[in-house]
Image (cartoon, rainbow, N blue to C red; front, side):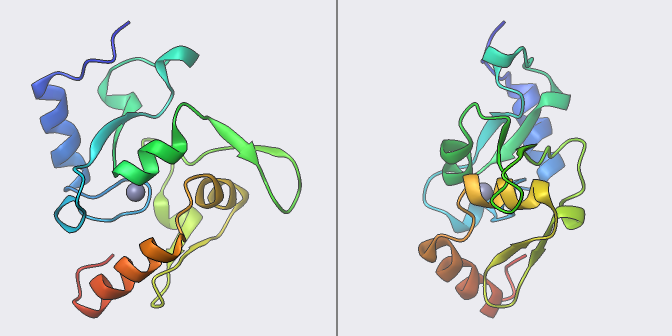
Length: 137
Ligand SMILES: [Zn+2]
């Protein structure tokens, strides 16, 4: 198995996501470090380098997610899987508030927002500035 993402696959990932991180929805044009292909199910867990297992992720989301598949829900203390960009609908699990915060709506949303640290103060500030310029979400 390889982590190498071909040029064709990378193009598909970029087009499918319209340049937005598929976790936090920030556009590639509004960050310093370029977005990257993320193996939703990491190779070490048996994930493949194929379109159905790849998502465009910003640097922060990709680093915080790493190879994780799940986390502990702070409300129930149960292990809950992370948001899966290929099989889940973002709006079912999250809401982007006008104050720049991403509000989780489900247990999957909670563990994902917590693990990927969606609401770090710097990220919220960036989203506020983008919202004011009608560039987010
Ligand atoms: Zn992101």
